Image 1 (cartoon, rainbow, N blue to C red):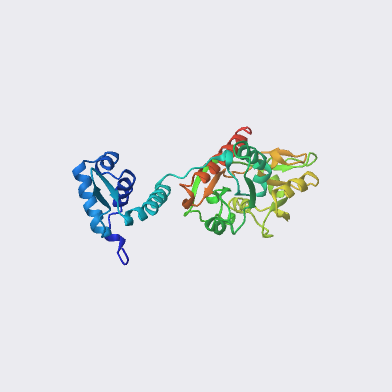
Image 2 (image 1 turned 90 degrees about the vertical axis):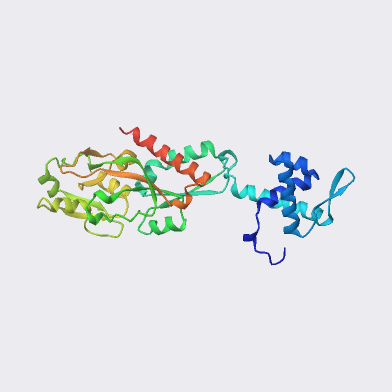
Amino acid sequence: MNGMDLRDVDLNLLVALDALLRHENVTSAAGELGITQPAMSRVLARLRTALGDPVLLRVGRGSVPTERARALAGPVSELLRAAERVFSPPEFDPATASGEVAVALGDEAQAAFADTIFDALWAEAPGIDIRLHNLRATSVDEGRRGVFDVAVAPDLGGLPPIAGAPDLSEFVVKRIYTRRFVVCRAPGTPAPTTLEAYARARHVIVSFDGGRRGFVDDLLAARGLSRRVAATVTSFGSAASIVARTDLVATLPEEVVRTARADLRVTAPPLDIPDVPMLAVWHPRRNADPRHRWLRERVMAAVRRRAETWG
């Protein structure tokens, strides 16, 4: 078959050849394949033409394979097993799984959900290792390149543009729960229950690049108001800790308050801050991978269960 173009060959002939070589009998091979003996004889004729070899020779009342056919038996069987692996659905057994999985979370989501994610994954797959990645400006590109398997990320599309909503159009997104914002303060700090008191308060905001404004400033500006951003920090946990020890106030996701190791007082914001859907995000090339399907389903379920306990 040197130089033969495989596009000119019916690869189903390999299945027939395998059956013929195992049975060394046209009738028996036909029965295995569910075709008639005459049909199998026609297939044998096609094989002889394709191979330039008789394949089976009549000897008395039976048949024997030619030397060429005997030599092909092993390679043909191996090719068919390889084809079965290609076209069979992949399998995944978490109980015997090993290796690493990577999940991207913001610092506040790590504090709120990392333990329950770990418990959920290790309950079924104790042999896997879990790597957490920080959500950041480069996370979209990292998700595209497969740096992490799945992310839990906010859908910022409903917030003012300063929030910097990433383009997730090429990713699969599934809503997990809804993030709500609350105003936090130390026990001795007066509650800014009116919009005017809120605007007068000294605020600490989370800014990953050291910026002086957040999306709340745009919401206030739409009402003709502004606030003093007295301090910026780079993590929600730091903001909660600082608020607990100063007279600053902070507008933070509810998850931060739920997991903060600080004595905080909480009130509802005196302005309408849109709720933020929290999403599971992954690249569509991983959709059919059973290992990834198991991972993303367990991550989503674990996060959802924890969020539901907050009411």
